Length: 466
Image 1 (cartoon, rainbow, N blue to C red):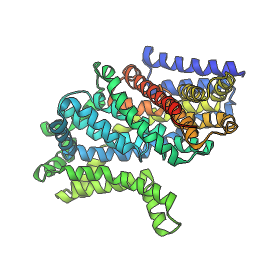
Image 2 (cartoon, one colour):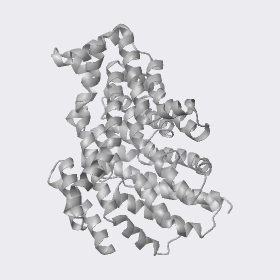
Image 3 (cartoon, rainbow, N blue to C red):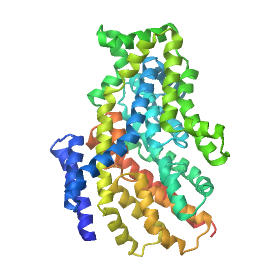
Image 4 (cartoon, rainbow, N blue to C red):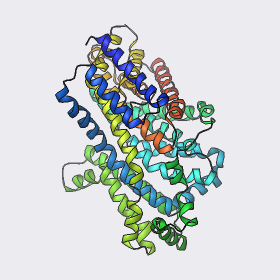
């Protein structure tokens, strides 16, 4: 296909996908697979390779997401049923007031998001979101979406997140320079995004039945005699006899963060050896979360006299609710990979690189368009760096301005997350909002954050000496 035909195919596929989900009310999982197959056929992918392309890309996405979502759901359920989420929620309400709780969660998300990947951080903090929803009677989206936007801002701008690391390597800029400029930029963008998007979050939000059931589970289990709720009731009774403390909940939230930070630092700073291997192993996200599941089981259950079989039943009950999140996220990954493999991104990059736009504008706009067209932030960042790398290399920029170019790409990489982005499905499904509500809130807020970040980069470019 010609570059123009590829661009039109990519744009048209996104439009068709939105129509199928919003107008035809087709389930997102089915719609994503149908459109992915259609794009693969239209762009000339051999039929013999089509099944492998869809299944392979979906498997890779689910291989990363499924284990993290499942382990995170286990941790969240134990924190929730133990009353830990309510303890933290009550403390936040008393200290900052119910009106400022979303801001408190944003601040927490900024700290957690620096060392922790986006999906992991969102899932780790969801128990607090559900606890706040239960405590205040407000929809989870009010707390979860601003928190997730903060996570995405840090994810797109700062090492050690994969997109930022890939861009730093492609442009030959030190990670230290990116952190030195990116940390204060991300902090300012986070604060301004929270302020400027408050009208967006003031709109009414619904909550899907499955997420409402999760939010109300503790209350429901206390008020019914359903045998299926017996493990949950026993878990809560043990916690009522010996209430959990804020320190215990902080511990189970912080431990995986510490393990992942330690693993990253050990891999970069320590000499090869047994201790380095142990720390790097423990810092793998699914290993850190798995260890935290065991810590939660002991600290919140076994230590309070719970039988191991009961704790196991409580943990296992967290899994069915994750299935639809995992499947939709995997289908979104398949659609995004088909768009990448079809050459849509390369066609857009070639077209924009010939426009003669200023370097910062080109870096931002190209990454943003690739993000909208292809989906994942990391893919958009790596594609832009590959396209613009030779051009930037010929300009002989210093490390400071190379870092600013990388941050401009990062700003573009967070913009307009929508239906071809796995992050969109994680946030909207876990917050219980519809696709339409997600586009009007999450997608719009990511655009606001991206524009603020790009404005900050331009201001730094103008004041820092060359």
